[in-house]
Length: 388
Image 1 (tube, rainbow, N blue to C red):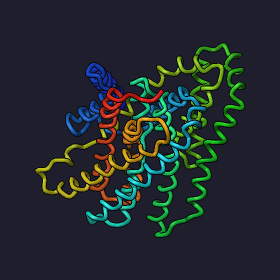
Image 2 (cartoon, helix red, strand yellow):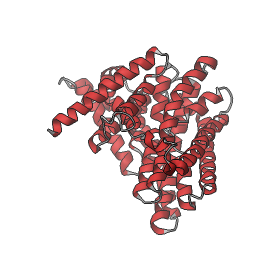
Image 3 (cartoon, rainbow, N blue to C red):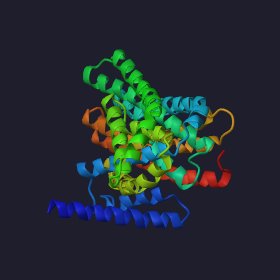
């Protein structure tokens, strides 16, 4: 019976995702917007046909890992290096401004200092998966703005991990371990540098092994093994798995098997990615936004303040772009919080840093920023374009 229920849930997710994605595409929007809305419709907010389970969450995380691998595979490492200074500045502003504003709003609303610090930290996150999918749909992934957004989002993850480690230590011990902060930062930067350098150095070995194998699906199996290896290593050193997957894509992008890897793994990616985007929508419970319920007033006020802060803080970051580039595209591309914001919120709740009501406010901010980013990106790029 459990298997039957699981299979039926997957059926609902796939049908809803593809139907809504197709509808969004026909309306000139990104398919990811349709998938997110599909999650809201089939989730507890409307029909309550699908509930989050650990198994579905794991499948969704695999989807994110594969999506970030695909993004890395389609990226140009030299292009990232060219926009490096802009990416660093955008990321720094995109962390500092939302953090400060989020903390200020929380304190003004009497949330408390520690929860306020945590909610400010949650707003620093950027979900590269959402923006990458939209930029791909619009054919702008390789634009200057696209490279800046992706580079800044990776740097954001590193900053976010450092901030998160500080907050967890603060919640547990009441003090900050600066040694732990330095360790997290060093491991994060070191992992990316070492993974890419060694990966590129030994990528010909991958091609030689693939060329010698004759079994069916050997290329896909070895590719997935490499992605999972770097993803698990990233997790082992305290980084997000998506950073390891992104690094794996950058490495294999320089191998002679690049075209075949991209062609063969795309169907696998498409099988898992919709699950993640649908689950983001499922996680949103719109009942918390019911203005008629007096118990929701304080949550609505906090949600509104954090939402404005979340949007303004990231759009301001777009003005960190040096030289050519549409700053609005970069700022809007940094808006989605997606899986990174959800991870932050979940840790805050489990660590008892924030309450369930405050978790609900963060959840709404995560979902709304994730929903509006595809619409705004589509509009701004169609109106003003992006730099090649």
